[in-house]
Image (cartoon, rainbow, N blue to C red):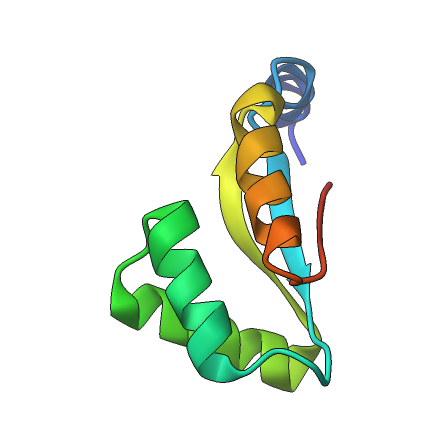
Amino acid sequence: MSTQTQELTALETAVGLENSIIVYNDDINTFDHVIESFVQVLDHSFEQAEQCAWIIHTKGKCKVKQGEYDLLVPLCSAILDRGISAEIN
């Protein structure tokens, strides 16, 4: 990794552009509930929400939204309020 790339990565992290909402798989929520939640809360298209749900199901987790920390907090809270396991990383 070049010095310029490392500096850019450090800057993005410092300003919060590297934050992500990560959703984890569980045995409680249905695909329909997760997809509907992503469409309503995260403004995903149906296709994007469905792809994320499949990734969560097969890999155990998925980054579903990236952005500034302050903008992700209410979105993550809304996902958690729907009984879906998530965190900001």
